[in-house]
Amino acid sequence: MRRAMTGWRLGQALTALLILAGAALPVEAQTIFRPVAVVNDDAVTGFDLAQRAQIFTTLGAAAPTPDALRRQALNSLIEEKLKLQSGEQIGIAPTAEIVEIGLDEFAQQFGLAGEGLRQRLRDEGVTDQSIDDFVGAETIWREVVRARFLRRAEPSEAQIDGELDLIGQGQSRSFRLRELGLVLPGDDAGDEAVRAEISRIYDQLSNGGDFAAAVAELSSVPSASRQGDLGWVSASSLPPEVTRDLTRLQPGGITRPVVVEGGVSILQLLEQRDDGNQAGGGSAAEREQIRQRLISATITRLAEGFLQELRRDALIEIR
Image (cartoon, rainbow, N blue to C red; front, side, top):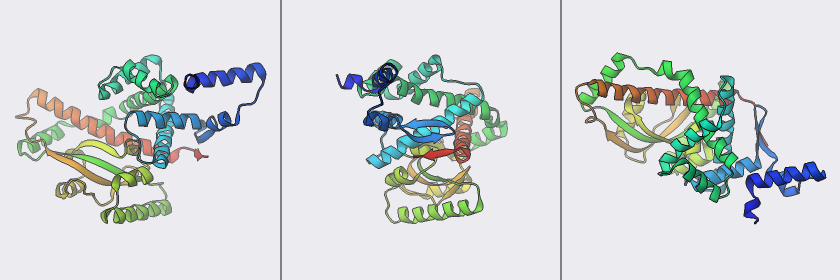
């Protein structure tokens, strides 16, 4: 019975008590529904924080320690507010249809249908509203970045030809990367302090520090909510000097700090692969495959930078 009254039903019951009886909320309820952060006037409550942490735990994506999990969940919720706000600015809201489409697509990563994933989260105490917020924000964000960057991300025929040339020479390579990044605040003194901090972190990691733990504790860029995971990144989407550094590394090795859009990052190489046999002489299908890959890589890079800009310019109060 106690579990059945958690989440949304608990919220309904408490609201009814306030309206019908004029009673004050219990101390525990006051605490859990109190804002822990405010993002441009949108509140993030302790209840939201607990729900997001449970989502990460259920999906097997939780940070390794309770403190790191709290930071991970809070960072995700702050970014969620920014993503939803950017959607509102261009007239996109998370309708029921948008949420269900996003849930079905997200669930495929776990070999489930959308309703199957929803039920799995419900069984662990996650409310439908928390699920909808989590999935809806990501679906809205995808539409926002496509509307903002798709035209800019379109590769030229020369770029596609260049990729084909590299593939033909057996030089096309991809890297699976993890990122630890700090946001540059945009003023000289602040930027200098961030660069000094990333250099200190690099020195510690170079001397045997735990990269995954450092990401959970220190990273402030969007990939932090995914434990720094950037997935597979094509060499063609990276600066040449970064590609050269990564090519020399063994799995687990790290690059020197790299300036990215809106911040500075250290990259850890997890795996690398040669993509030289993936295409042949440049058929229409092969050119389209390369085109889509270049668009995806460019949009991802621009979206990460845009989210960092939104966070840098937002009014964020942590309580």
